[in-house]
Image 1 (spheres, helix red, strand yellow):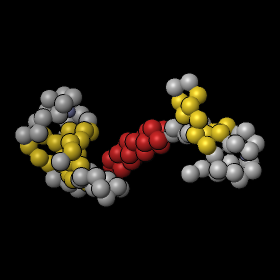
Image 2 (tube, rainbow, N blue to C red; image 1 turned 90 degrees about the horizontal axis):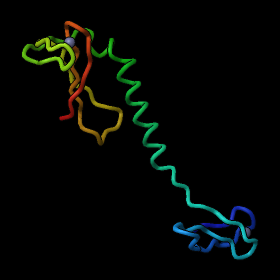
Image 3 (cartoon, protein in one colour; image 1 turned 30 degrees about the horizontal axis):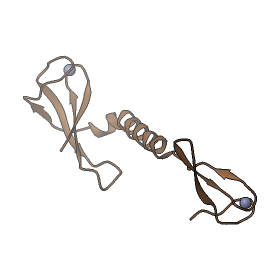
Length: 110
Ligand SMILES: [Zn+2]
Ligand SMILES: [Zn+2]
């Protein structure tokens, strides 16, 4: 249920074209449902990407090298290897690698 921000009456849903809008029966104010779920998801994704970029030096400091892991960029078969937990607890840990030759960083989800 949505109340009119102008007069406080209960807004009534009404079809307008192929969308459903909310109309106030008292003052006639129209509201369109906010469709910004995708936008906020995109921002979250960008923040995650930025975290990887910023923390790469820190993450790979002192981690062991693993042989037999092929760099997707240069084909070298040795990389630094570590597992990190993203900030969201409901996401699985992420394995990340850094090529010891070209420095390329990539990740794999568990
Ligand atoms: Zn109203
Ligand atoms: Zn490489």
